[in-house]
Image: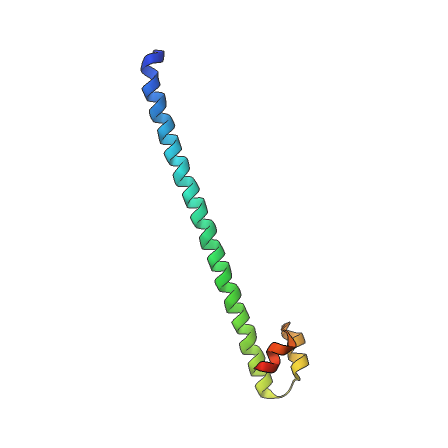
Length: 82
């Protein structure tokens, strides 16, 4: 192709690549957001499970608040409020 005839072709290729890059970027960003949301959800679930375990241990009366807090790595104040 001549220089004049190849210009529209090159422009269309550039537009295609720009569009593809925009889509790829959007997909990567969406994946980051989804991963962050899933991680936060899992952390919240794990935290709730710790609290449930602490409450169950406290109800048994076999361990002191200090022992429960230490074993579950929770603040003593949180265990005392359960």
